[in-house]
Image (cartoon, rainbow, N blue to C red):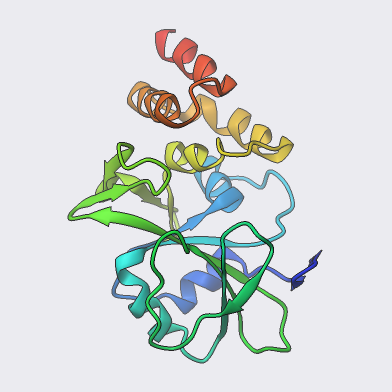
Length: 207
């Protein structure tokens, strides 16, 4: 459980979210620290929330799936302010951060993140030059839970890297193959060229 100035969090577990999204007819992926844990196959640290990535173009389907939930969007992003996501409302960029709870009295349990796509490609909202085929964006756990590929999740963590992100990086770096390391290093070069992970990735790719 975590306490936040915008309300208390009791994050859902990935397996609970997977059960809720079992009938979803759109792609979705567990994101954040849980995605790293699903990649490495073990728990690494406590979690204050549960992040789920969906494509912006699928937001109406997500809203319908969770139509009885209380859902709020960070508007503007990063300003510490939430407002209700109204039924039927289309969220345009830069809005992308949605907090979800079962009722107004319940704690927050899921944080939805909207990202962009063009055709069959995922496109980073941070820099449209950073992209991947949708088929490479995610993986599935042994129990069938979709989660972001570790190189994609690490890319998200380069914007404002914290100590817990360093923990995630150290845990998953040995599992990245050369193509994953090169893609991540190139993506970091396009968005945060001085980030220290880039040098680590390039060194690992050469060994």
